[in-house]
Image 1 (cartoon, each protein chain N blue to C red):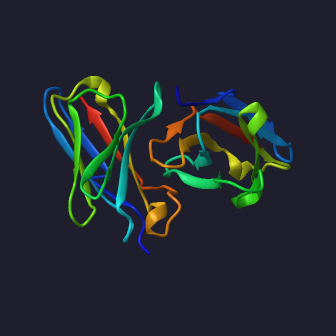
Image 2 (tube, helix red, strand yellow; image 1 turned 30 degrees about the vertical axis):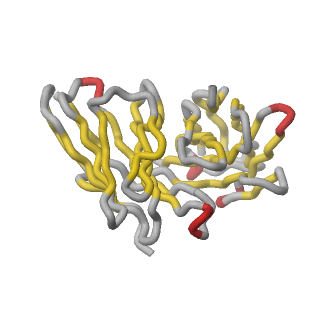
Length: 113
Length: 116
């Protein structure tokens, strides 16, 4: 069955700490993968996406993610977080030929100033 | 370009009633998908419409239905509301690969439905 899972439900970091949020997917076929962020009271915003090509993708606000096919993973990273990164982060995936997007449960990130 | 718009933004209904939510996609986008977001279940795919036809469907009961108009605007209807239908309902639009896009979905702000 197609699914996306996130390992961390709540992560608490201090400013300037490095971040890595885990995401694993289970898909048969060509998969498109995404990371979205949802700031409090705001709607989902796309951080980055992987469709094909270079497995290391860079997104907005200094975020990046690496597609590792052998591990079925698409972890999100940021070398140094800021207080303003406090938000909920969702990993999502879908097959390339349709729009049935499956989301992970989300990871709430709290960055302490 | 204007983003995806959803109306109304907030809605309060009582059990047993029905509700219709509206979504206007980004101009030129012909695919519209609907999602339900709840604290317990997270984000779940409801269905997708493309060119006025339902193309994909998630695992929701028949009380949840939708349609798409010729101008790509979409509506979602929930009949016989239950308390558990309280959620944020999100709409996303995309431009398919065959029409010059890459299927990337752009989300609207959502409609927050509260069922009392």
